[in-house]
Image (cartoon, rainbow, N blue to C red):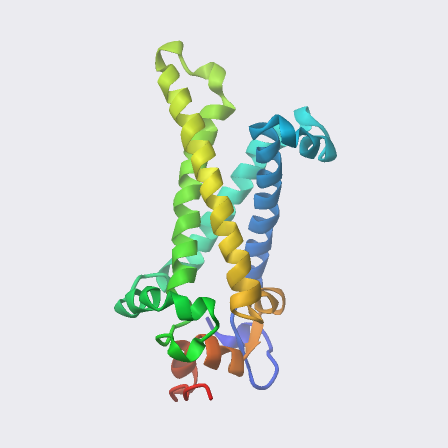
Length: 220
């Protein structure tokens, strides 16, 4: 990604261009709608959510269309970021040191590149869940077109859809934690696009070395 795509302040580096940020926020908005309406469908205790969003019929109508928007966004993000998400040997070491990450002891972590192993796992988790949700959702969208002799396909779709949705909730919470608390400033990069070099040096020293040609010195 070239820094010429967007003017960045001195001492900053471009992390996400406009297309990446727009796709991310459209995906986030569609996912939140899917999450809320999905909870309303899942339990009678959550029916009030559907009422807040226009009623059960409106939610039932819009839910699958929002699912298609979310799926398209994830596919676009896959095209943009998959080449950065390959698991490397350093990522295996990162997972063994994840306790230090949780405790913000960054100096004890292996040098992460543009994305650390946790971020890569979240990416692949959402990609896999999107595929499962899309395939099972298509079955649930048009159940009247499925012969009764294929009823077990319906049952499987319900199980896969609910399980995948619950998994995405866990991934979503981890994403919030990592973007807001574990890496302070990461959320701002998805708003403005750029991050200070000090941020890169602290949280992604491998990427810092790629950018500057200099290794990040240990945190004091």
